[in-house]
Amino acid sequence: MTATPDAERGTPLRVRAEAAWRLSDSVSLRPEPFGALAYDFRTRRLSFLKTPTLVDVVRGLADHDTAGEALTAAGVTPQQESSYLSALTTLAGSGLIEERP
Amino acid sequence: MTLAPERRATPAPARPVRPTTGPLVDQFEFGLDAPICLTWELTYACNLACTHCLSSSGRRDPDELSTEECKALIDEFERMQIFYVNIGGGEPTVRPDFWELLDYAVAHHVGVKFSTNGFRITPERAAKLAATDYVDVQVSLDGATAEVNDSVRGRGTYDAALRAMANLRDAGMKDFKMSVVCTRHNIGQLDEFKAIADTYGAQLRLTRLRPSGRGADVWDELHPLPEQQRELYDWLVANGDQVLTGDSFFHLSAFAEDGQGALPGLNLCGAGRVVCLVDPVGDVYACPFAIHDRFKAGNVRDGAGATDFDTVWKHSELFTDLRSPQTGGACTKCSAYDSCRGGCMAAKFFTGLPLDGPDPECVKGNAASSLEARDRGGLPGTSQDHSHKGTVRNAPVPLTLMRRPPSGACDESPLVPGRSFG
Ligand code: SF4
Ligand code: SF4
Image 1 (cartoon, rainbow over the protein chains, first blue to last red):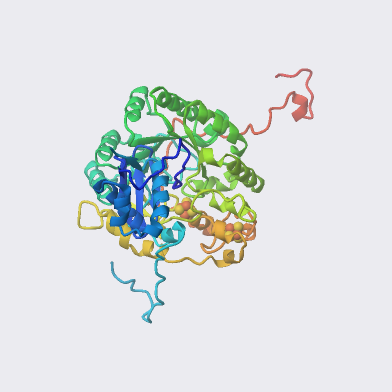
Image 2: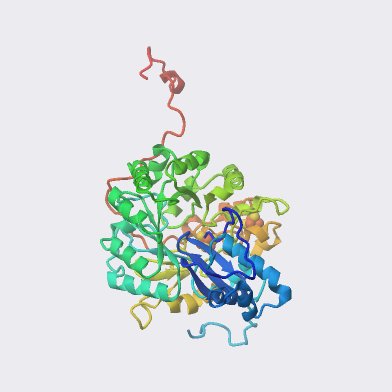
């Protein structure tokens, strides 16, 4: 089983709290007791979201004007914000989430 | 599901509870709502007769799932969000409805990676396969030369695999897989395998030979020797980021020293936890390498609906058991236990070793004495066999040329004739 998302490609896309993001079109989430599996049908790559809060954040991205609002809506505290933003940056790096206009 | 009747009536010790945080591997031990690595063998029919076939394939089983049942199962996979399945066999392309089922799966958001010997991957098929992201192809090749490959897979199979890969490359298919079962005869060819894969734009995938199916008959002669295990491990450490292994070599992680040189992957037997097999007649097994009644969890035809895989996966007694913490037996005393975890359940079972002891290929040599001591007559064997009974067109070519032919008759024979006959 290959389950290691590699962060191999390109320049890292940093996710800023002011920008708007969404789950990429080619990605599906499957809820699991620990969080969720994320599968990208385009790259055929499987990733793991390891906390239910991160799953809520990712699902909420499309419904909020900014990533910051999605974090707040999912109950992420200001103290936790930077660690969640860096988790989102990792997801952006592997193409699981994409910036939207 | 009902309570297991043979259990003691005294209150059972409380089941350990799934942790809410921590490493994923701990989560996986408790199982998931749906498998991550589901293999679906569509048919026991195969045009070949490989000596090491894990599913003892050859002849179709009259009771194989119908097209409609296969579609119902795909519907279930979609509902369970099983994002992709590994389709195998037998040779799946032998099924007349194979391409129809492939299209059906794609239309229902179930990605497919299918394994093939390549005979039927024509330029036209290759073009269709290249046209969708949802389908991936895995071509089997077990030798970097025809001599080594055809001794296991059959005459002409090396050429067929290379032809299939050329067709896929020419159709523009990227990153399809070239899958190699590592044996005593091909461990020395790892660099050549990598070069072949690169030639076709394929990703190299190396997997472990397990004593499953007909593999049990050839395991003693084919499984890598102890020094070859080390060679393989070193090669994986050096090339690990460029090669897929399906997590199959975690028993080699025991070579790692001081936490250095662990192989990437989960280092966990996923059987019944994140891995399972649906066989051509709908039987559900804990792992594709564990086709035996001992590891059968149920059948997709058991339930009320057209198919009911979901119930077998979530509630079968066998899978529930496999998801409770296992004891490592003698291995728990081993310094490598955290990375190796005692190795592969199927390899132990089919070589007649206890499931809670060391892997037959334990790199610390801790299985050697029990392998010696076991009674070969008492090996579990297979509980199904669909092997061809007559002759096959592409029969394996025995490998007799592992040494160089004598350069002259005098090298071989005490009788020295007047001239060499080449
Ligand atoms: S039985 Fe062996 S092959 Fe199957 S999941 Fe466990 S370790 Fe892997
Ligand atoms: S004794 Fe067990 S844990 Fe240790 S290396 Fe051997 S198989 Fe692995």
